[in-house]
Structures are given as C-alpha cells and as structure tokens.
Amino acid sequence: MARVLEECAEKYEKPGKPYSTGVSRTSPPGFKVQDWLPGEEIATEWGKHYETETFYAHHRRHGSAEIGALAELPGDLLEIISSGAVRDVPPREWAFLDTETTGLAGGTGTCAFLVGVGRITAEGFRVRQFFMRDYGEEASVLDALARFLEPCRVLITYNGRAFDQPLLETRYRLNRARSPFARLEHLDLLHGARRLWKLRFESCRLVELEQQVLGFAREGDVPGAMIPYIYFDYLHSGEVARLLPVFHHNAMDILTLACLTGIVPYAFKDPATAPLRHGAEMAGIARWLRDAGEIEQARALFRRAVDAGLPDEILFRTLWDIAVIERRLGSGDAALAVWNDLAACRNPFRVRAMAELAKHHEHRAKNYALALEMTRSALAIENSPSLRKREERLLKRTTWGGRPRPQPRRLAGLKRD
Image (cartoon, rainbow, N blue to C red; front, side, top):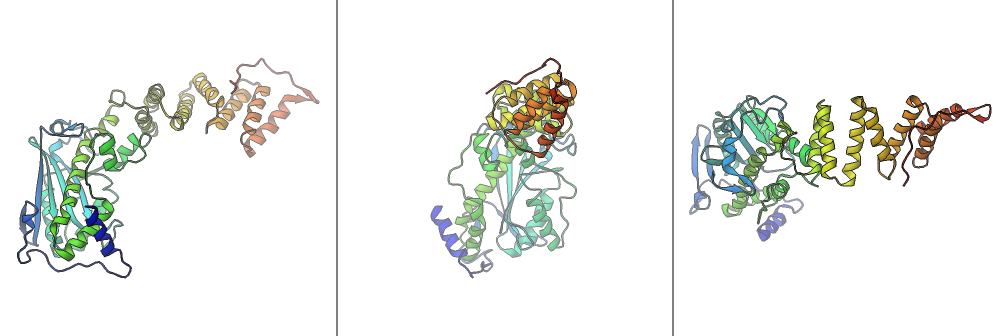
C-alpha cells in the first residue's frame, strides 16, 4: 500500500501535470470490475454504475461495540442530541452516510466517486456502496442513491453537514436532479462527539475515536488525503485493485459512525446516569448543559468531574465554571470557597479569582483593607487598568485624613503558596 500511495503522489503532484480523467473504464477488453469487487452493475434511466454491499452480522463486534445491539437502540435516542429534531424514529429508518471524493476542498469541480450508506437491520449492519466507474456514471449513482434513501427518515454523518451533504446537493443541482436530503433530518455526530471528548482526546477524528473509544485499530488503512490520487490513478490505468482499500476505508468509517451513534447520544440523553468514566467526558457534557441553560445539572456534573479527577488545564477551568454557576444560583459561600482555592495557587484563573474576592470584600463584606490586599495581590501578577482603578478607589476608602480608616473584622483570608 505504501508503494502504491507513493506512485500516486509522484504521478499527480508534479507541477503543471493536470489530473487525467482517462477514458471510459466501464468494460475494457479483458477487464471486469466484479473480478476484483463483488457486486453488480446497476442500470437506471440515467445510465449504469456499480454497487457493492458489505454485511456485518449481528453476532459480530467492532472493537468493544456489539453490532447486534444497534437494532435495539431506542427510537428517542437522538431527540436530545438533535435538539428535538429527531423524535421517535426507529434505528431501521436511520441512514449512515459517508463519501469518498475527487477532492478535499469541495467546490463545483469536486464529485463523490464513492458513496456509502449504512443501514441497521435485525440481521446486522449493511453498507451499500455506490461506485462511479467514470464521470459519465454520476447521474446514475445519484439517482440510485436517492431511491435507496427513500425508506429513511434520518441522515447521520460525521462532518457531513459541512462537507458530504453540501457536496452531494451541488452534484444533484448540476445534474438537474432533485436532492433527497430536504426531507431527511440530519444529525452530524461530529458536534456531539467533540462536546463529549474534545477535553479528553487530542483529536476527535473518526479513526482516532475508533481506536480510543471502541478499542479497534485499523491495519493498512489508506490515508484520506491520498484517496483522490488513488481514484485518479484508477481512471488513468483502469486497475480497480488499487481502489479496494478505499472501499474498505469507506465501509469501516460508516460502521464506526454507527457504533459511536450507539454511544454518544446516551451521554446527552441522561447525563446523570450515562456511563461516563472519565472526568473530562463529564466536564464536556457539563459545559453543554450549562450552555443549554440546565445549570443545576451542569453544576452536579462539573462536581462529579472534579471528584473523578481532571488534568490541571481542565481542572482549573472547571473550578471556575463551578464558582460562576454557584454565584448564579445564589450560593455565594460555595462560590467564595472555590475562588479562595483558585486564588491560592498558580493557575490561569488566579487573577480573576482574586478580582472576584476583592469585589466580595469591597461590596458585601465591606472589608476594604482585605479587598485592597486582594487587588494588590492580583496586580502583582497582572497589571491591568481595571485593577489599578479598583486599587485607587480602595485606597480612598481605606484612608481618612492621612490615617487608616477603621475596618471591620476580617471575614476571610487567602491561603498562601
């Protein structure tokens, strides 16, 4: 595979050498696509194309995921994660879609030479792949795809809202055909996966989550950036064998997408009982709950995240979020305790915590001397105009006729490094 990719890159990355569309490779002498790729040639009123299907039986596993469990997913699973757009739609009416294209940037010059659609059945999981053997077969592929999606009510993709669906809709328009996507509710799982795992993993690419979450490591997988070169090489040479890893890559992406759909929405459906094992996952869902206005649930999940353990860069942000929520919910003492903790050690929120403590001691406790001390401690770390202004105001409040004003008894102090 490495040698094939190197040959493709050398052939099509040379400056001034245009991509070759070749000639029609539908049935050259002595060559048949089905010799390498089990499937069948499909005829539509718009021409012909090739289709192949991969079946994953219900008793099989994909890493830690049970394929048979997909058929048992509840119909209301996607309601929360889709903001109520998908209500009570059974899994058999979900379509998992992914494309392999002639370019990664999109645009009217880019088309999908391979479209894969996965469907959940009682027997297992089926992936139908629509293959454009040459550019003249695009209209036939699009027509067959639209008919295949007719029984479906939900489209599930991974970054498909930004890439796959707009690209296919453009191809339908250019072919003067009606797009099937207008009637389908679209769930792009990428957004939910990022909320859940961006604090835990460096990357939320589908293949990375496949390995990190499902525990499945692909062997010999083709890099996505090389797929257009491999297709152009096929058009030039007619050698389907070089495309076989691309078909496998596409089918595996769709299977992984389906398995993650059986995991991600549960975290949003009921965060309090979801099987979240890592503090970073809890913090990610808590942020989503906070942004959605569910601040009491967010507070509880943030505190669970702290108890579960977090790396420092997430811990300090989470503590700050807890303090803000506590203040919003009227729990001033709880917020004060968190700000004291943040002000007591080096972290990105230390100055902001000191500023909040200064506000508290100035406006609530009326302890101007302690408020001035907090302000000056913050200024020693960060010289900002707002802190300087606060210091000037507090200096006036803590002196009278050149002498210190009497101050109330200190109500709270700071821990020292």
